[in-house]
Length: 639
Image (cartoon, rainbow, N blue to C red; front, side, top):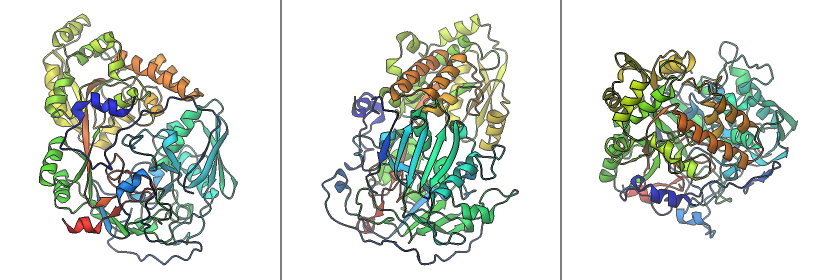
């Protein structure tokens, strides 16, 4: 069943005034459920110190550099409808917080800062027709991942991945690397450092907090100058291995080891000074004004070509700029008058108003990548009682929240381990396919809620604390507070900033009743193995303290499963079990609205900028993809 059928069934997510031009509107086929061989070969189609000073980009001195102008040849491919690429121009993106790191040592912190000039080993394959897969969710099936820094990879056995690097990659022509060739030793240095595998780095160092999926990795070895071999523990699922290795993010983003050696030390283990930002990507950082802006210019030494028009050298853009705008109303005003070119995650009413004042703006409406939830501490009474959790769920009117609070731009279904769209695509179990008795446990029924609470001897005289992250939708949780009060569950809301919330809830588990943040723990649409970890003891992501042997077993079996079919079967079982056990309370999955100015061209994907600017960029959409976006001078001149 294609996602077009799914979207037909979710008509509340589709609004006539919020559509893209025909070249960007897409439906999505479900992920293939075909069992794959454990031997896989994939070959790509195309081969903080802040100042206000600027630095001058030296001219390229590396041999073999190719320059090109846009090719206007019609290819007979679907992407011809996107228009003719143009060189030049500046794309202006925005962030809502200052950049605090310039490389991936501390994980996603500062990710938006280093993405434009660093590269990842894999990327999204934007030669795939968006009617087949439009990259609008975080989950990336392996068949839609393309080699970026690689010419090929293979799995000679189920626990070994051999990666063949391109031989035409060079570090940017800045000291201390000075444009030298990028080799397999650089890849090994990255993984040894970020995962503590060697080269003087150990697991006691403060590595990326979400590296749990990498625990079965034994070593990364430079087999020769341009070959890297990843050795995993025998029994690790090949599906898990490729999911982990090909996922976007800090794990796979390769920093310059020369800069690390020159500018870091025991007391300063990460590159925090923007002047030391060196990469192999399409842009070079030339200026950073603290809490104001970051400016990047096209790297004259960049090796990449557009996957769709392989004769076209990337990047098309001359400059990419990030404006730091903390206040959402200010950012929306900047978008409205064309001072920024993209905005992701705009609230429903603001998005509707934007389409009225700016009818030419391109809008993509997407379901948020997770279900918003109310999260009880499953390790403490009375919330370790399943009947109490079911009673709490009966007190929540999900359809009413979706239709009124979110103006109909939300899924009126509860979610389980993975998101409903993923479940309908074969990676989980969507709400319409739940057994009737399980669906019945999610109906709005205050009278039944009171009965269950009374039978469980729930103490309604106590006021239970809700530890709420300040970035969360506070209006939503005030509704939750009111609905629970109607059945005798009284909440007091305490607001904590994101860092304090994480320290209190995720690190120390210092909460006695409920917590919630700007993303719930259910219904994520990215890495399925991370979702298993969210309900497995020993992982920081399991901050709701689930300790259930069945959920632990699902995770263990999934990590060891040797085929896609086996993983999908386990995921279906785990979704049903999680839905039956109400580890977290479903609230709603609202839509998110991503917008781009009409003069930004070349974007076929579901995210704000098609998840890419040129190869690899940060900004509102994040990303690491070799699609080339360009600025249409003709269209921009009309605004």
